[in-house]
Length: 133
Image 1 (cartoon, rainbow, N blue to C red):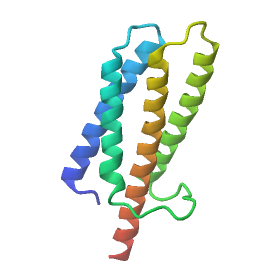
Image 2 (image 1 turned 180 degrees about the vertical axis):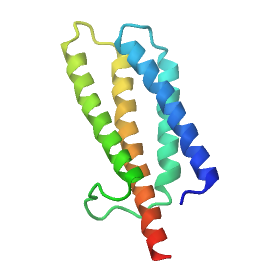
Image 3 (image 1 turned 90 degrees about the horizontal axis):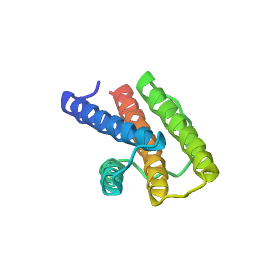
Image 4 (image 1 turned 135 degrees about the vertical axis):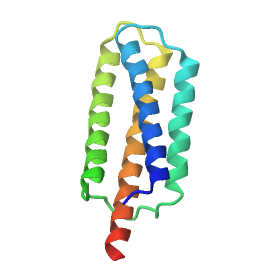
């Protein structure tokens, strides 16, 4: 079972990411985008990755997407983000005018999928620990 404090941290992370994604959707729909804000969002994601990566063992083999419903949902979310990233690359390549923000958006999505993968690994690790108890 997840600790209440950890649950609140993940809930806040989810809300923040949702807000970031709304900004990206607005940009892709034609709204102006504050590049500084997106860079800050990217930094937020990268810090979240670093915080969680340090407590996980180094990867030495391929990770199969399996585990509890929580872990499976994180893996599904990760694949959806990767798919969206590919579609946005295609959209950007078909645009007449390339913009600097396009690269930042793609970096954000790439790092977001990395974060979801790390969260899935973390939950999977917790599940294994709980089974051993």
